[in-house]
Amino acid sequence: MTVPHAVSGAETADEMQFFGAVRKLLAGEPSAFPLPKRFARSFDPSCSQLYITLFQRGVKPMRWGSRRRSLAESVRRAVAGVRKRKGFEAFHVSDPSVCRIMVEMVTEEIPCRPEELTWMDVSPARYEPGVTGVRCVYEGTVRYVMPTDAVTHSIMSVTQLLDYLAGRFGLAQKGQDEEQRAAMMRGLPLQCCLLKSVAVITYEAKTLPLYRGLPSPFPLSAGTVERVLRESIGWLADNMRRDGRFLYYYDPLRDSEADFQHPKNPGYYNILRHSGATITLLEGYTLFKERRLLEAARRSIDYFVTTLQEEEDAEGYRCYPFYNKKSKLGGAGIGLAALMRYRHLSGDGRYGRYAEGLVRHLLSRIDGEGEMIGYYRHPRFGKGAPLVGIDDKTKRGLFSFYYPGEALLGLALFHAHGDGSEKLKARIRHESRRALDFLIHIRPKRYADLFEPLPADSWLMQAIEAWDGIEGVVTDAHRAFVYGDAAQMIRHMYTPDNALCPDYAGGFYYRFGDHVYHDGSRCEGLMAAYRLARQRGERAQMTHILGPMLLAARGLLATFNTPESAYAHRYPERSVGSFRFKLTRQWIRVDAVQHAACFYARLLPILK
Image 1 (tube, rainbow, N blue to C red):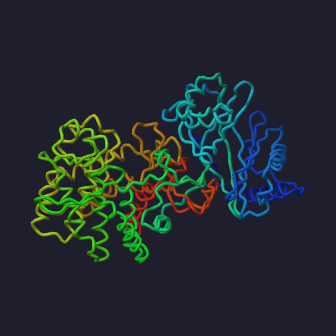
Image 2: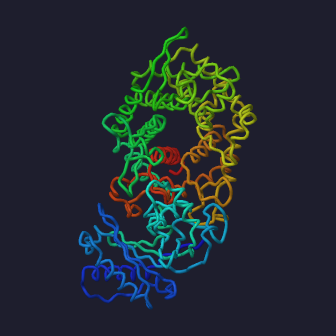
Image 3: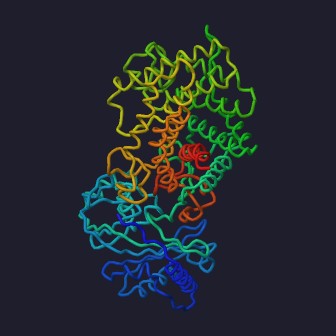
């Protein structure tokens, strides 16, 4: 893939003059304009379709495309087309602080067969969202999906691309889902070309060249990380409900809070991710000592407490979160972790009874072999009743990679900061050791078919880091697991030498060629391995992990929403400071923000 042109002073100057002239033309004022070098050197009258797009807060974007014999003619025709569009008068085209203008021009067409389009294989027909686009002809009608459309329409996969094309051709039928529309498009006699383009957008008085439809991310530095941390943790705090819940999901293109994974339940919420966000607020308080973050964390804990179901038996009081008709092991574990982080930072012991109840519940979910059962209640198992004494088939059905590590982290933090008796803490140590032994020695054999080449158990890596140093709990084999998973993550990380695109560097893949996974959660796993090595004085491990971890930190910054990158968002102020799901997918979910912010919070002291 092509690396974007470096920005020179001359290019910036002529682009600023060009966009100033375009604003005058859009306002109906005759104006001569220079031809920006970035566009002029790539103009080809045989393919260079040019689009001018207007973006403005609260208004649906507006654009017009043109291809003429010269670049100047194409620009003038696109301006005239935009001016004639219904609703144009809503755009304050003369005000750079209000209306942003993007110019994008096709620079190359590469014929391809639509049935060969791929986005996860290295192939001449690879669609790289945001870097390549598509020109399609169907029954004489031509439609362009420009590279930047991946950002402005939240497109990542070929299925999403074809679904979008179905709408552009007017072929989408009511009742069809995304997969059905894409399958329908694959069956049509389409003529297709992949496109490459050059694109520049204004931001106030500046012009920004785009790569993958995005301006260049911040360089990695202590100052950058501190800014990103303050804004992302602030975003979580500022988007809390009165009842203590966080903004769970937000689609900034549509200004919608309806989670795409739960279309029939637009108010869906996840209590496990809720507690992860609570921990993030507490990480922020640790660094910045802002009282509002501690108070926001307490409000979120108050909401968590409302979800607890309470039980009493011969062993005493127990409680567990019950939400969406499920009781997850991880929900209890991360909830307990949040309670203990709050207890440690605030000295507030008001949640002590609940903390001990969660501990006893978690210990009760460790079976005779040391396996931690993923759910206590689940609507598809045992008619939703508590699951006790279940068989191996049911255990497999309740399997989770994440929940045991989350539970062990909660237990480790209670052991460190809780008010429980020494007898209870001795039991926690014993049971945690059994659970760790199962996870490290038995689970990889029993559930071998569920393991992927890219590890995903960062919570367990963090739990082992937290338990390390407590006599009788962590062994060399447990530490070897942490270092082994870190090494495997590093082996499955794109580097500047092998990255399919420059912004892939620092991101992960399951199989080489996959669209990149910039993942804050896995970054947390690398951080846990690094901190484990540091606290043990293992410098070779520290050196092995640090470079790739910093590369991952740089890559993850490309998913951070800035005022410059949020140009297509309906109300940019609602998304700035958050992290997107993917490079071009514009969805924002609380855990994407939480994992990235927690990673950067632990990275900041290393960079200073």
